[in-house]
Image (cartoon, rainbow, N blue to C red; front, side, top):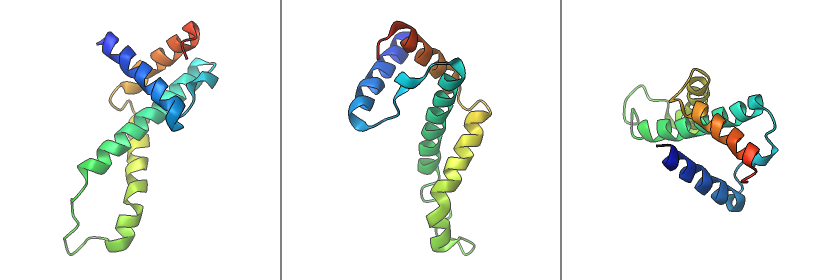
Length: 108
């Protein structure tokens, strides 16, 4: 599992250089690494929630219509932030240690 995580981190870092992803090279402390990891986990959870709620409650008499559709993404982002701060899926823990390891080895 660790080898797979390292490969995914390397791929994400390489892709991030070309796609404008957050630059983790500026992370200097464990607190900064934890914050970046939680932001990533929050983004990941938000994407999962968006897919999970696709098509749910769109054709019911109590749906929110255009207003609900307009703000649904923000609701998913807030749900994801709360979930990530509360422990989420545990990705932030693993990502924090990987970000710190990359900082120590200078592999960025």
